Each structure stands twice: as C-alpha cells, then as structure tokens.
Amino acid sequence: MVDESVAESVRLYGLSDVVTVISYVSHAEAIQHMRAASALLLVIEPFENAKGMITGKLYEYLASGRHVLGIGPVDGDAARLLTEVRAGAMCLQGDTDEVASNLKLQYSQWEKGETVRGASLADISAYTRRSQTGILAEHLDALVSSST
Image 1 (cartoon, rainbow, N blue to C red):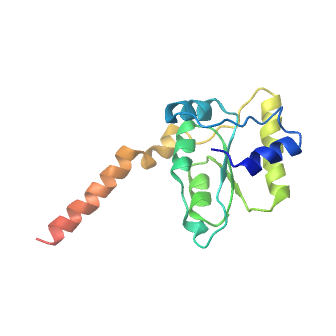
Image 2: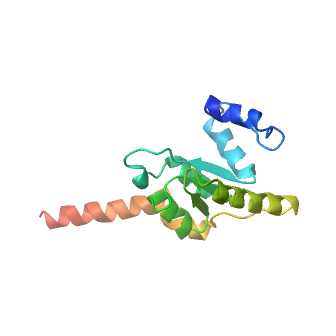
C-alpha cells in the first residue's frame, strides 16, 4: 500500500502523469508491476536501527532486474547490498540534490527508450532462497557436528 501522504505529494507536485500509484494488488501482480517498471523506489524510514534494515521488498526488487533508487541510510546494509549487486543507489533522506540527480539519470535514459538495469541474476545468485537456505544448512550442520 502507498501511504496517503505519498499519493498526495504526487498530486501536489503535478507528477500524476509520470508516477503511477497502484492500490493493493496480489503478490503475483505486484511482482509483475515491479518487472514492468522503469525504476523502483525503496524508502527506509529513519528509526534507531535503520542502518541494519533490509526489507523483503528489496530482495523482490533485486529479482526484478530493475534499477532501485533507495532513500535511507547511505552507510546501512541496504545501501551496501544495492552497491554490491550493482542494483541502484541509496540516497540520504533529505538529500534532494542526490535524489534529483538519480531521477534525472533515470528520466534521461527513459526518454532515450533505454532502461538503466538493476542487478543481474548472476549478481544476486548468492541471495536466492535456495542459496541462503544452503548457507543456513551448512551452519546448522556445523552446529550439530560440533555438539557431538
């Protein structure tokens, strides 16, 4: 769901012709929207442990292969992941110049009919459920074998 304040800002700043606000849809339909989007926005609201925040949504964004513009801690885990897999950029909340610069790049590419790509499947292979489950299984095996 999109917070009403975000939808209101889109209207207030006359962005309705370039920003689509979509109400609740099924998960499968949400994934289709992500894959069809020109770019994706990830917002990590400020709170005490925001630097450690990696949302499930970020992993879905990575899998979509689309460029991600993040707004949140630039020295946090989500920023590190975006950089590591070459999926996008994280801008500090309130840094309107950096956000504008990233949006201008996206818009320039869009005008040319190009898409700034996000992470490739090879880049994110270590973060798939299968890969992460394998790592967890290795840790559990190590714990079991060390306790015997």
